[in-house]
Length: 121
Image (cartoon, rainbow, N blue to C red; front, side):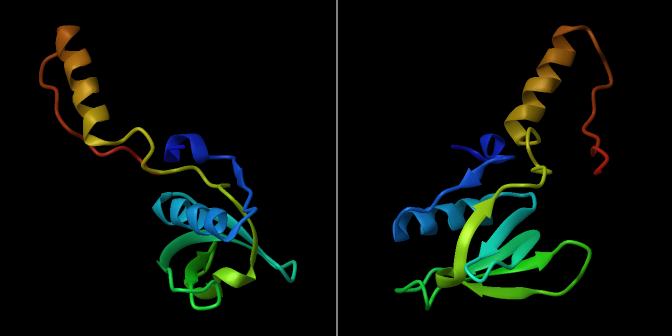
């Protein structure tokens, strides 16, 4: 499942390997995720760092909750659930996507085609 397909999905971790894979996907995801801890705490924010150690207790993610500049460190062993809740801000904005749009515009006869940054939400 690529990052375009993750938006809105909930990751189910039935095994330690499932949890590790889900957290890796969350790290690669360029939108906000929602992490539910085993104690019931829910944190929505941007997962910007992770360290995959030998055990779940040695492994952790770092997340910046929405609306704050705080950074929270959560051990893998504390994670009960994961959801890809935010829009992936880089979805569809790869170099390949830009080249495809460029050639579509060129084939349609447009001129002065240039690369312009898109507005972020």
